[in-house]
Length: 314
Image (tube, rainbow, N blue to C red; front, side, top):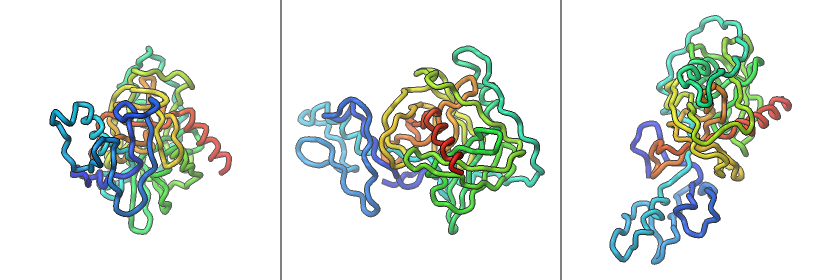
């Protein structure tokens, strides 16, 4: 079903199936491969009495039983990569051609309490977050990214830059910089870009391995629908949630209820101390709709390992 929300477009990506609502599961979230290109086959839940299509109304009659409603909800639950296509790029502000300023050193994490200060964290990280815009063959896509070192390396999602072509990043001050693709890893949906150093972007500190906790406040920072510098708040909803990101095998992800939408792909999920805990990558949606409070990020320890390997290969 095509979404009626502007900028979201056709539902895409693998279907996400919750084990808590689907009988016969082993107790962990699973995802199945995306359907092949062409007319989508009907989804057939494990419901006695035959198949149920996406437009079939739920059976609320006594004979249907109360247990059928959760299963029917799964028909429209889809895991969607959150990059924006050409329709989402319209919100970008015009870039200025100011001369680049000297690059700033990576700022240390904020020395605050366990939850940190989200206002201070947002102020700290915005200087290191960029909009990523690609153009190839008259088609464009957009996402987000962030600087990880003082050599100009930018982490983003692979699905943001998978089409190739010209890649540019736009900082919070509106300056547009040409970026070079360093490497891609479709299996983890991580890619690394590089811009010339001395650009005024600030590398973001990374959260120590094993320190992220369920329930701690986090911020999703990026450019949803081309709205650069957008910050949304939530908490870490779960850790090590097995989902399929980028078309590879299932991998553990950080689950959050911070609002993530198309264009957030590749942006950082940061804690209250201004440290990156994950790379925002996908959301679960119902019937192709927008954010429903279930977003997923690649854990920063895994993303950092992949990024360093891609940088080493050059």
